[in-house]
Image (cartoon, helix red, strand yellow):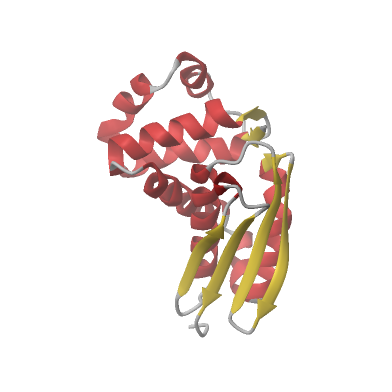
Length: 187
């Protein structure tokens, strides 16, 4: 399974921005394959091994910074949304409906992870339910990263509050990963 370089870059960028004192320690904690990816400079349009470029580096980030890999993954996802949704994209996010953002996120998902599929299966006035139906190498850290990205994208949009919960998971043997997104009134 592969992940797009633009998603990979957010991991070292996050550490450099928020925990620069731990960057060298993080790099040194990586196995050779992962370290080579980051030392060589991550190309945004290239594809990388999900395990070597995202899972292992996120595990190391979580251990060094948060003592909790899932929290590190969630924060990386939030940071990735923050950096991706700038400029003209930020304008579109603020102008669009929450449903449009989630629908677009489910389509964009497949451009960052291959092969993969995410679909909107239910929606109401203040919620959307997403299913990740195809993901060859399910991983709880990647699910947390995706949930963090969605949470921050919704906050950027301007909803009053947002909760994102992973209610089912391919990693727990469920037939799909289910992400429930709920929000309050737009501010």
